[in-house]
Every structure is written in structure tokens, then in C-alpha cells.
Image 1 (cartoon, rainbow, N blue to C red):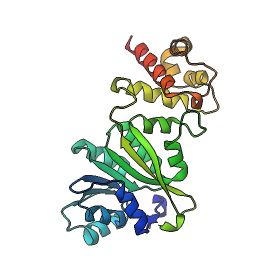
Image 2 (image 1 turned 90 degrees about the vertical axis):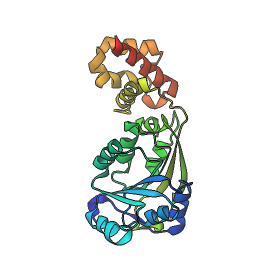
Image 3 (image 1 turned 120 degrees about the horizontal axis):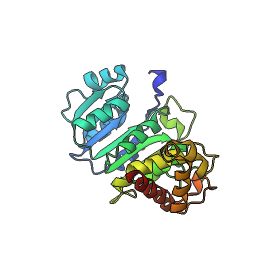
Image 4 (image 1 turned 30 degrees about the vertical axis):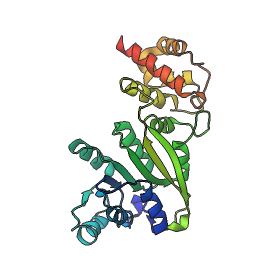
Length: 269
């Protein structure tokens, strides 16, 4: 094991079976698994007939996966390296998978998910094991203290639900945090139109840059303020009917979308 990779292996077969059941049906389904480790989840996916591409950074585990575990299985493919780099490259070269899953390292789990969401690959089903506090943020509702740019990023394309909590004893080594399984189901229609996507991402990044600041002050201090200037920010808030003294977590979906539409219209001038 390599400490810097934040590895905690999910040993409990009942828990692994619950995770795999969220991805059904799997027969002849393309599944990408991030961080397979020694392949405990991979084995169940292959048993159920999935065609698995695994992304693993640890060279030692890659040798186990390739030479001892699944190297002779035609339904198994291994991509070695940092998933933050290899995932985009593999998406570029191949069609998007039907499922993606993983027991993600705690130190990079949210970064991996954000990368997938920002790129807009829109995979039909995604299931990940993460720290419970990260899953709570992903599933947060407007007005909640946990409502964040991460929540909005996740929910614009997906219905996001916390499936179940995992006891720390199901892992080795035992983590010091509680873990949860999060399930992403692709919406039939995104909450953000394709033509507004870039503006929307810019708006939510700026507005949540500093949670204690007001909407007005975050916009002025961010990229939008640099683009529009003070008068432009004031006009943007007036045109979208958003109260400047509010904080970002108080805004609703409709208000974020209104700001995105106004910003897009300003940029198109």
C-alpha cells in the first residue's frame, strides 16, 4: 500500500454486493472503475457480465490486476496512471461507458467526481464510495449550510442520492471517517441548457468562492467582476432580480439560472 494514495480497501462482500446491485443490469454493460486496488469490486462486476475498464495509479496493484487477477479475462481492460489524466484521454478516444463506479481515495475523491461532472460526459449511472461529509454536500438542498457549487455541479445533470452508509470496519485499514455510497442517475433533461453551461459554471464558482461574502462582493472579486466591472455586476444583479446582500447558499436554482442567463446575454453583446 502507498500512503500518499489514501487507500482504504473495501473488504466486506455484502457491502460490495450492495454497491454492484445499484449498477444493475450489468450483462454486456460497459463499466469504468476508478481505483480498483486489488480488484475486490472488479471481480463482482465481471461475475455479473460487465465489460470493465479499470483505472489504477498504483503500479504494484496494476501488476496484480494484470498478471494475477484478471489479465486473461477478455472483459477486463486496465488503464495505468493518474485517473485525473487518463480518464479524459480515454473519454476522448472511446465512447462514454454506460456505468462508472469506484471506491474513491478520500484525498482525491471529490476532485475526480468534479472532473467527470465538469466535462459533461453524462454517463447514465455512477456509483461511488466517499466520505459521508462529501456525499452530504453532493446531496444538499438550497438553503442548507452544505449547499455549495459542488452540489449544483452534481445536480445540474443528475439526480443524486445517498444510498447507504458504510461502517468503518468494512474497510482495511479502518478509516477515521464515516463513508457513504452515492448514486448518480442521469436526468432526462439537464437543469442547465447546453448554451448556458459555461456561464453557469462561472457563476457558481464565483458565488461560492468565499461563503461569508455576499453575492455582490463575490461577483466583484471574481472573474465575472473582472469581465463586467462594477457597473456590469450591479446591472447583472438588478436584471436577474437577485438581492445583492444575500449569500450564495440562500439562492435557489432559478436564481442561479437567471444570473447565468444574464451573464450569457452580456457576453454575447
